[in-house]
Length: 444
Image (cartoon, rainbow, N blue to C red; front, side, top):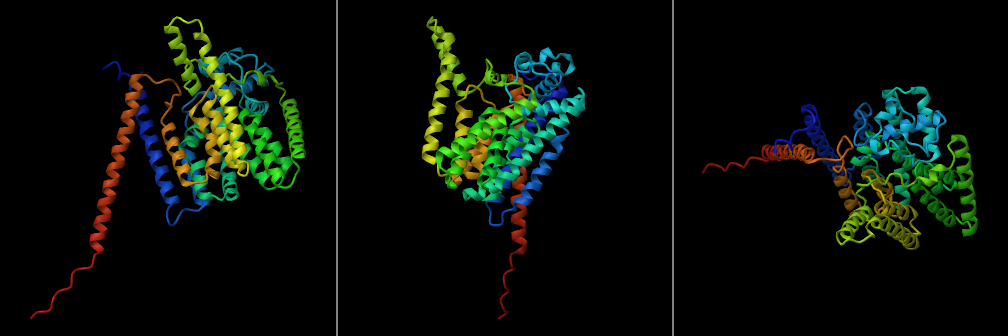
């Protein structure tokens, strides 16, 4: 038992307990804020944006949390700056202290990101010149700019969808996954979602060319955003364009943007061949879990098909995602923002790789376009669970770390319960003091 509880150092143990103590408090604060948003006097969107800024500010100066991907971003940007093929080689080819900070799993794999993000990472590489603190701060500011675009787009998308802008901001921008993974983790999903949101706002404003350009730029950060072009086409058709003309003009704009952005970045088109880079042997995506379970079962019975189990399940997951996306758009075409949110959620859920922040692909748009409060409540519940799913180090948890994390969360629950009891007692005391005294009867 003593070995299970022995972390790498006492400081690491205290840090892990404190981190989960803080995460549970953050989730509770977010839930209480959601109650206020649903209350009789909800805060204005401007007040929620101020809360987002206050909650994000301490994370700007913190070290990278919940993932080491930001080191990969910086190393890949340095590779582009050094004219190394970032799609054919991993950061190990770069060498040096920056490559040493990249997680071992990704040190020898090519970048799965598009030329737009790699151009941004390369632009940061020059001014920082390998200085890690400066590079990390720069990458976090880039992510924060993406979050700002998300927050700016959400109220406009919500009004178009007939939803409450304040509720959309609460669920889509203030949720713990945004703070923990897009701000603290500086993930490039923030840039993808920010550009995607800006593109959809442009499409709703009947600016089809800027809309297609922005959505394409989002897809040239991470490929799933390309589904946003379907929403742009649907919105153009609803604005009175003929379907064939809408598809052709959007496609040509997207193609021209891709060629221009790739030429400007100078990275080539190698990213199209490495889109499966995030797939690892221990990935906990649904199709990967089913594939490993099937492979173990086949191996138990001595079948030679065991090595094919994981690839087969990945293929089935991709096919199921394609079918589901087609059904979604056939049924929900009049609600393109909602349809796009569901489509991105399906792609994340059925894809060969998943991380907690991938849930934001769909959640961002569902926050603005969910048709019922029950959908929002279920989405919020999933957000709360996923916020607890990754250690602050970003690595795999052992038994000792899990125990320490549970202790931190349990301590936070105790503090929250005590605060609730104190609040109840204070309210009861106030009610007792304001209660009028009973009238005295007249003397006989």
